[in-house]
Each structure stands twice: as structure tokens, then as C-alpha cells.
Image (tube, rainbow, N blue to C red; front, side, top):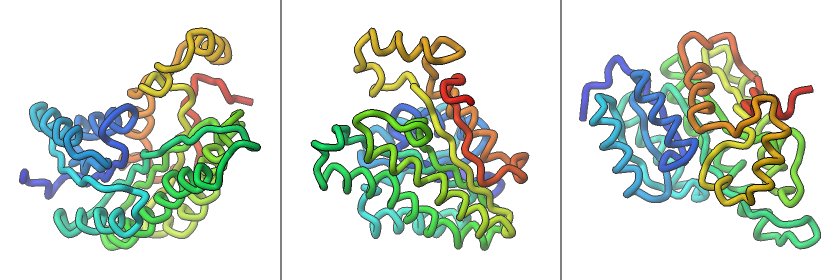
Length: 249
């Protein structure tokens, strides 16, 4: 294991692909030691090898974030291994889209447990190590669906909207310990999920966006890089929409 004494330790969920992978790659390039968390270990090992080949530091923690005990232990083990935990990025999430009248209890519970409960579990587990280190940067990845709603996503929008109030409360509780907590709300981002959308939907979305393009995972990673930096100590309790202007008012 490389010497990480002078590096910030960043724990990132959903790091195996898409936005999470871009965040991990960016933070590693910025000199952080990234702890990669996802359900599947193989893609995490591939990303770890890629990061290390580019001179970065990375570690792997494969677990199911919907399993609260296992997820909390993954964070606790990170602190045990490195002796510190500086940055937490809660990026992992799922969708179980359906219209309200057709949505099952299971579809509701799966999304709430994975997209909201897991964030609570992670923040609770990370708070004590961050308090000990007198430094912390918590970033919860939400969605513009949580800001304006979206047809067929009552469960997803509810979970992502709830992150705003939750994060503000965390920011108030931990701010005096030099720990910040913020929300990044991506708009339509060019990932595997959006690639499956019909072309007419993509063109409609581009028409709603001031920049006339979909976002890239790197756009979100750049925002996370700043919010988790040492320079962002006076930025907390905020929800930042990185959406090309789609939800501005």
C-alpha cells in the first residue's frame, strides 16, 4: 500500500462506472487517495489499476450499500486502514421507475433504502472519524428530479429531494468541527442510463438546456472536486444544480 500520510482519503460510492467513476478519477488526479465502493469488485479493481498506472492511489471496498451493517463496516474499515477519513461522496443510486398508481411498495422501498437510507448510514459512520480529524467534506449526489419532480419517478424524486433537508441538517450539526456537507444535483448527464433514451427525448432535453448539450460525468466530477477541496471550507448546506441551466429560476 502506498504512503498516504499526506493525502486526503476520499470514500466514493457507485465508483465503478458513470459519474462515480469520473469523480474517483478526478479526485485521484487531484492527489486524493480514493476508496472505491460498489457492489461489483471486478470493475473497481480495473479502475484501481488504471488510477495507479497514472500515479494515483486507490483502494477497493466492494459492498452492497443497501445492507446497512455491511456498508457502515466498509467505512469503518477504511478509517481503520488509513487512520483518517476526509471526504465522503455518496453517489450510488438506483431507479425503479413507474407511474404512481402502478408503483409497488417494493419499488418505493428499494429506491428509498438505496438512495436515502444509505446516505444516512454513510454520514453517520463517517462523522466520528471526520470529527476526530477536525476536517470533513461530505457530498451527496442528488438529481434535478429532486428539485422539480419527474413523471414516473415519485420514489426517486422523493429520495433525492429528501437529501436536501438531510444535508442541511448534517451541515448544521457538524459545521463547528470543520466538516461541510453539500448536495450536487446533476441534470441530464451522458451516461449508460441516458444512452438508452430515444433520440427525440435527447433532443427535447437539449432544447431545455441553456448550453444545448447533455452534461458529461466530468462536469459533475469538477464540481465535486471543488466542493471537497480545502478551499471550500465556507461552502456548506448548499444544493448546487449542475444541469446546464435547465432548472434555473
